[in-house]
Image (tube, protein in one colour):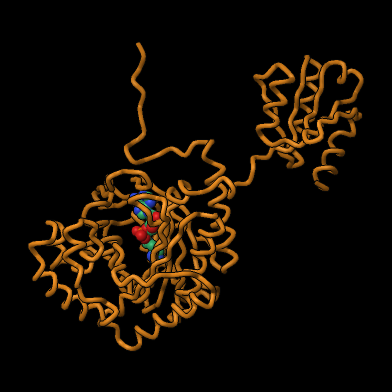
Length: 422
Ligand code: HAM
């Protein structure tokens, strides 16, 4: 009897070989640009003690309240699959005393994150982020640098319809003052708010600003703006960030309602959205988090960073951002002797690092040539028993369609030379 097939978990997707060209283009751009801007790679664990996320992201955020994959391990210790990487990077920074390192304290990461959200297009339960964290610089220039990298990354991938929104949440004193005023305003609007916001109104009033329920959006029409509660130093920091963005010709919109779903932010926050993505349109977001290192037991250290969602980027990536598939040499071998010599040549080319392939299932020249076309080959080595006995091969130039006869012992060197000069 046929066994039932086992399927992947809802919101957890395979990335199939056919998707790989997109993922490679994205990951290659991420790594290359992060290094160009002076960020070094860091890899932190996929799971950590639950307390790390509760303490850093904030107990009354959606992520910690309802989206974390948390489980006791066999020793009864509560563990959580990382919903984001900032908390883990800060933990590593404190644990390994990276503040004392003389090298630049700027790190980047790529990898999977886990959130138990309702799956939909662009929203998954296992998703991937490319992110950066820059420690030790309170200057607005560090904010500008990470936003510049984020913008450069997304525009270099030619994503259409990008908008950068920026805001300042002020320092902790500014925010406490604003929080109190906002909470008073929300109390007066309580009966217009959704149930979730009525609860948040006291636990985390700033989150109400982020609610998409139409009734809440309408109730917030005359809400006080955080911009009016910034102390002069916070205002100046924000103005310098905006000045830096203008100096780099990065277009932005100031959105005083941009609060973000994580509690660790101070001063600058930002988000880049992509017009064509639908409801889940944020492709990247971040901000400054000057208090987090201290919250996690380290020395007072300013920091700023961002993370981008790679699935959302892959959804929007145009074909023009992809490198065409390329396996420069393809082998079309026939007959016992032809195949034996052909596989030997394939092996020699691969050992020299030249991507070379064949199709073991195909038996006709037509099929092999169309396969060679599909993988973007420049040359096809054609080799039957006759060629093998005469110790030569036919070399077909896939662009000009010309074929020439080349002695077997010279073919590898000929290809090396031609591919080098092409
Ligand atoms: P975040 O806004 O929670 O920030 O996530 C950053 C990006 O990850 C989002 O803009 C989105 O593109 C992607 N993302 C988030 N959740 C999902 C999901 N369920 N499915 C698909 N993509 C998703 C952070 O994670 C902060 N750690 C960013 C940061 C770094 N702030 C400072 N440093």
